[in-house]
Structures are given as C-alpha cells and as structure tokens.
Image (cartoon, rainbow, N blue to C red; front, side):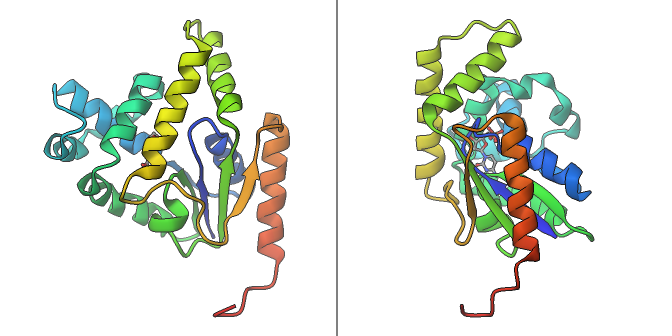
Length: 214
Ligand code: DC
C-alpha cells in the first residue's frame, strides 16, 4: 500500500506520516529532507539557490547531509522551497522518491507532490492542512522550546511566503491531489490529528474499490 501525505509547512503532515508508517508497519520517507539537503548543499558551495544550474549541481549531495540537524532549521526550509521551483531539481529527485514508493510492501511518503506526481496511484492520499496563524504558532512554540528567539509575526509572514512559493510554482505546485482526503488540523492536538488520520486511512482501506471511470 502506498500512502501519500501532502500539505504545507507545519501542517502536521510529517508527524502524521510518521505515525501512519508506525501504525501500518510501513517505511517512511520525508521528501522535504531531500529538497532541504539540496538547498544546504548549494549554500555550502556558495551557489545561488535561485540559479537552476547551481541548484541542479547540488542534487548530488552526499547522503550524510540528510542526517544534519541544520536541515531542520527555518533557513534550510526556505532554501529548500527556493531550489524546489526548478524543474531540473524535481526531475533529479524523482527516481529516488519513486523507487521508495514502489518498494515491495508499500510505503508512506510525505511532501508536496506525492499524490499528484510521485505516486499518483497511491491507494491513500491525505492532504493535511491548518491555518497560517496556527502553523506559525506551532513553529514558534517549537523554536521557543529549543531556545531560539523568533518573532511570531515574522514567522507568520515567512510561512505565508513559503506557501505562496510552493503553491504557485509552475512545476508540481502544492495542491490536494484529486480524491485526497483533506485533514484540517487547525483545531486538533497532536494525538487527535494522528487518530483522525489513522481512522481516515483505515476507512479508505476498508471502502470498496471505486469502479474505473467513476
Ligand atoms: O516539508 P518541508 O518543509 O521539509 O519542505 C521544504 C521545502 O521543500 C518546501 O517548502 C517545498 C519543497 N518540497 C517540495 O517541493 N516537494 C516535496 N515533495 C517536498 C518538499
């Protein structure tokens, strides 16, 4: 079974994808990390993330980079969003994601274009979302807990800018795949959101298959 979990930043999609993978016993890939690694590699080499050639060259990043704590930072997320607009970068990362999705037994992948591009045949597609204010607040809490001082209003502006770039890029923009279950986590706590996702996936799996052309 392939489970595609898409959604904007700080929507809870990563937490939900991890929990679904544990619950259903499937391997999980956080595809955002791949774009974050490309962004970080560009920065390490003094390149320009908005330049398609620099960004493409960074796609050969060493796998060890995926383990770096710095990839979790807001700066890395923003660099990832910038390199992800280049079609050549998306193409370069496609095979790795596709192979992960197609492994025997299935997988859970989370990102922006899993249900639309990477695995459009996924048996279950979830689109996890939440209001910009709530997502900014979550990120702010997370950073504050790590002792990083951030301005909530600035965080909200950054998240809105990232949404705008991810949703309006020409290639594989962030959107709910046709037939995706939309899960709005704005008013849900962590455990509630996970329970709602597990229930939604379970319901989808026990539903009779949709006849072709329906
Ligand atoms: O999920 P994340 O915040 O780690 O993703 C960082 C950026 O990477 C995101 O703003 C857009 C890009 N991305 C993408 O374009 N496609 C994906 N499947 C995953 C992430």
